[in-house]
Image (cartoon, rainbow, N blue to C red; front, side):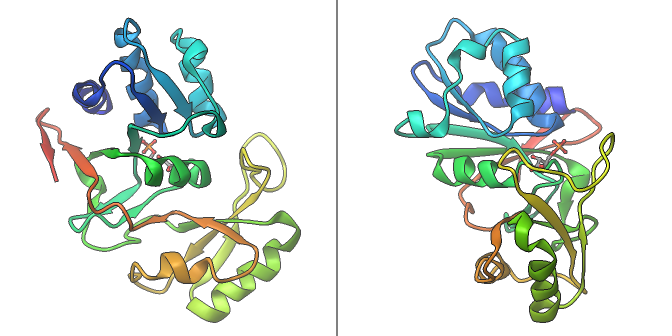
Length: 222
Ligand code: DER
């Protein structure tokens, strides 16, 4: 289904575009599919080291530029962990939420690729809310989140390395499990806490094109 979504998203790609590459397993499929359009003049901005590597692996490494080197993002293509019918999204299970939000919010057109089970009635439905925090203050920030918003927090630890996950930006991630569904205003409210650098709540792109694939092999726009 990820490959189906990825090839479906190619229709939005035009020559001369600056394209934001999301992160995650679905975004990887899009980057691989994009290799078929290598004849086009494309500039690519990756939202993670992982997506950079995939772009290199499929021969698109020479198109990559950092965000500071481009004047616009024409199209961003990304996945999501959960999305409501009102296009409130939860992202960040892959730990790339900060650069993703910069690119996804800057994009002229934002295309989100999800499988059916990720369409939920409210967020968070299954996943915690990732919060990228300043490492030096992580426990203080976690306590502030619990104090102001309730629920519980946990420092995200990785596999293959003892200790916390360190993001591509050198920060930690605190995973917050609220006691119930969250209001989209929490995206801005969380960022009022000093030391919170970004959250996995994506509420400001209600104009996003959300493509949903199901087991029958159909793709429909949310
Ligand atoms: O971590 C992220 O934000 C990813 O984009 C995530 O939301 C989707 O990852 P997946 O395509 O591997 O499910």
